[in-house]
Each structure stands twice: as structure tokens, then as C-alpha cells.
Length: 298
Length: 329
Image (cartoon, rainbow over all chains, first blue to last red; front, side, top):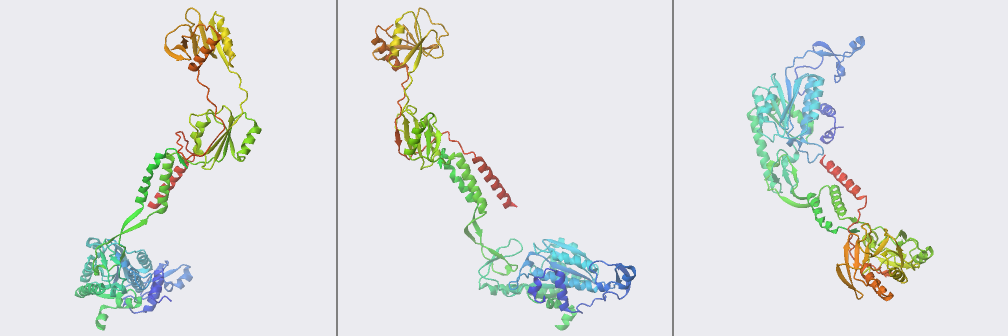
């Protein structure tokens, strides 16, 4: 069973991983306004690969000897926007679980959100920020869109820096309709053009949810000491880690992430902090929980 | 291995260039990537000096190419001849076999004796391996005695077959005179062992013309030496005779001798004196000789390079280009 993060990290097939994560997640995470297939019948559409078999009209198959899918009337106007931070710092691997890095977790979490959105009939699009560019996959519905998004996620690799404000401007035009923005990032560049873009989306009354991913070693500074370290982004200076530097590290990291949390609170952005070694279901559950429910639980 | 242009080996320091290129001298302290490195105190970059070789295969090919090029320029010769017997033509086979057996060189290769064998040996001695011996079998008189005792880097043994009875040499002489005494005198010269043939007119074989007629000789008469009754020129003394000679397009004209010699004794003295001046001495034949190998630099100018050198250079060059290309891509 692909239950542990280690086993999941080694599963090459993103689709398979999503199924297992979602199977563990259960239902009722996000109250979509559309109940899936077949509430208000709208039209028949030719079957295309990726459609669920249960939506095929079997009686029509018997009559016409062709596969048709029943399309239902959709009344959901909520679009889900998936933001992936694919800057070089996202390549930071886990020191305890081999093969697991921040990009993998972010990618898988976003893929799960995409799958959930697809199941609920919501439109969803993807913005990949990395290498100084913002690549936008326009929002759409349906299984094909899911395949598109999964393919875009699968070919993403962590490199370069985050895009600047000008490059993000095109990505900001996406959200004409009410949207839920799921942003998976490591929040190391904060504030940054990307954080400002998210902040602007929030001011446009979109629901912005940020997933701040860190590795366990980043949280408690348990890197091997005696080695020189260099930042992943840019030709950074060298940094040392002696045994006595861990306290400094933890203080600095705490100050930075406190600042991030304060910034998000100030702009009413939902921030979920997670470590990539945690089970993905738990991370998703807290990320997808509506902000009101969070507040209620707090 | 022998080098015929050894100064080219002074170019060997060129090999330091690829060694220099392929050495990585400095490297920054190995730094690992860390996304949250900014939260760590910064440290000064440290250089550490390491000695490491990059692209060892390419380095070796480049070194081999340079060494081959220098060796080619230095005309490096690899000795390949072992024990060898140099045999002159026309020797009695039984004597040859006896000499070869006594020198215990039955399995040695045999080559024909080249002319001027001592010079030839000096020039080509680099082709013999260090431990090789050379046996020279020749007719007595084939090998002239050199002015200095011959010295070779290898042991060379000369064995000379007893010479066959020498055939008397025939000199062609033209006597243009009415005086009958000249014929008698040349008949007397002939009694010393060399034969004189008296022709009426000069030919290509004519060595001497005795001119005792009034007037100048015909313009088409040519011979290396002339005897004339009177003439001017350089004076030389030989055997008590004061001879003069002068060089003309027709040949060297000798004069000042008793004309004609009065007696057989005068004639013999004249012949001896002229002979010492005009005729090159016969080389003294080398006798049986055995030289010990001497350590010496055999420098010959006309060493030929082995035919496979250019192919070796071309192959190494292509290999170097291939490896360099493979490294870039």
C-alpha cells in the first residue's frame, strides 16, 4: 500500500498517487456547488479517453453502438487556481526520506486538488512560477483538463528564481470569476512578486490559500555540520554550519516564518504550514479546510 | 633506440603544456546546496589546493602524440638487426661456411657486402641491436686499411679470403715520336710487372701520350697525362728529378725529364719519379681484424625514418581530436 510518504515519493505515476491520497482523504472536503455527473441532464457528448465509465450511457450504447457520456448542467462558478512555486529552492530534498523533495510534495498536493476539482466539476487552471517565468494553463473543466494539468505538473522541474512582477501580470489576469487560489510554495522568498500577486488576488475577493512547505531538517536545522552551504537560487555566498550555529539558524528561520505568517494574517490569506515528511492526507485536509472552519476550530 | 637528430629531444619540455592544461589546481571548498542557507551565518569562501587530473585518457593521448612527434623529428631509429654476416660476391662457399662456423654465427642473417664497407658500417650501425655481432667476409684487398684503427659500437670481425693471383694491369700509351728508343723504354717499364700497350692514336683508355714531334699535338688528342720535351709550369722534385707540369684542356703535361732517357736505369728512375707524382697510391689492404664494441655516439646524417611513423602520428592525432570532441559534447 502506498501509504507512507516514502512509498508515495517513489511512485512515478502521479495519477496513481492521487487516487491513493484521495482514497485516504475521503469525501466532503470542499463543498462544490455541483454534485458531479447527472444532476440536471444537459446533453450527450462523445466519449473521450479519461471519462469515467460510470458516466457512460449504457442504454444509448446498446442502441447506437457508440459510447456517449451524459453531461450535466453545471452551476459551479468557482474556479480553482493552482499556483506552484517551482523556483530552485523547491528542489530541497528531505534528509530523512530519500527521493522526497519539496517540489514533489507541492506538485502532488496540487494534483490532488486538481483531481478533487475535476470530480466536483469545477474549472481549474495552473500557474507554474519558476525559472523567471510564469506558465499559465488556462482554467477549464473535465478529464482532459486534468490530464493537461497533471502533464504540466509532471514536467515541471525546480530551477531558477521566481518571476518578477511584470512576468506575473499575465498570470493575474486569470481570475475574472470567483476563484480559490491554492498556492504551494516554500515561502522563502517572502515578500516577493509572487506574494504580492497572491495578496492582490486576495484583495480582489478571491479565496487564497497558501501551503508553506518545509523539510523537517529545515524546521529544526538538523543539517550535517562542518560543511559549507550555498543557496540554491543565484550565485550565493557561502554559509557555514557549525554546531553552535543551529540556534542562530532556528532563530532566523523562526523570525522569517513569523513574518510570513503575520503578513498572511494581515492580508487575510489562509496559511498552512507543513513539513513534507508529514502524511500528505493530513496536509491536504488542513489545506483544503475552509477558512471559516479553521477559525471555528481555533 | 638511437636518435640521429638528438637535439630534438631538447623539445621534451613541451610535454609540460598538456600536463599543465589537464591539472586542476584550485577548487573552491565543496559547498552543498541548501534552500535555507540564508538563515546560516555566512563564511568566507575558502580555496583549497588540490592536485587532480582531468581527462586522463586525453592527457595520455596528447603526451603520446607529442613524444611521437619529437621522436619522429629526432629521427629515432629502433635497432632491429641481429647478428649479421656481410659476404662479398665470389667468395669460395666452403671458406665462407668455415669462417661462419668458427665465428659461431650459423644462424646469423647474411647480406651482400656493400662497397666502402667501413663507411657503410659507420653510417648504418644504428640498425644493429646492442648485443649484435657483425662478421665481414671479403676478398683481401676489398677493404682498404683506414688511417685510424676502425672502431665500432658493435663487435665487428673482418675475415679476408686469400686474394686470387692479381691480373697484371694494362696501361695504354700512345707514343708519337720517331725515336725507337721510347718503345724500348716502355717495354722495359713493362718488365716491372705492369704491362704497357702502345697504340697509334689515343682512345678513351689511353693514360699517357708521349709527344716528341715538332709542332703542337692535334686538338682532339686527349689523355690524363702527357710527356713532352719542353714546357713551363710548376716545378716539383721527385727522385732527384726536377719535373715541371702544367694543366691544359688536353691533360696534364709533364716535362723536364731526360729526353729520352739515356739508359734503362734513367728510364726506371724517371718512371718511378713520375709515378710517385702522378699516380695515386694503391690502398693498403686491411688484414683480418677483430674490433671490440666501443661505446660511441654513432651520428649519421642520412638515417631514414621508419615508414610507419606518419601513420602513427596521424592515428594519434585523430584519436586526440576524437577524444577532445567527445569531451566537449
